[in-house]
Length: 100
Image (cartoon, rainbow, N blue to C red; front, side, top):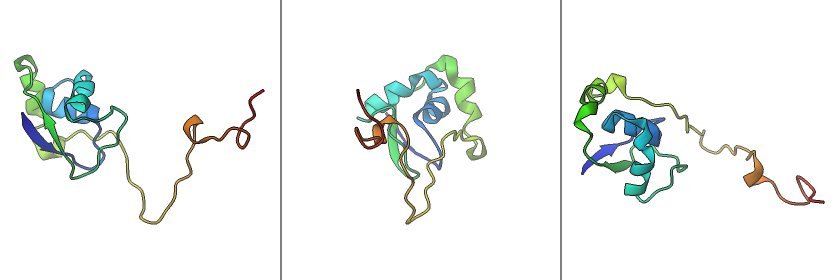
């Protein structure tokens, strides 16, 4: 199994496409690394990846150039800033909404 260093803004799907030639294998990558598919990857983090399917070799070769690294996520947060949570996981019963 190979080890890959995550670059800025990369997601599980980006790593799957870059290293395996198939974004649909992102769940497999998260599982291999003992992580959840919803976990945000941090720049500089090292993740393990299995060997790619030889039928995907052409796609994998496309990303061997560092200028072609896919990075579809944006996890940049300015130091010292607090970003307010939005969505149901941040809401409090009787505070943000009332259950009746």
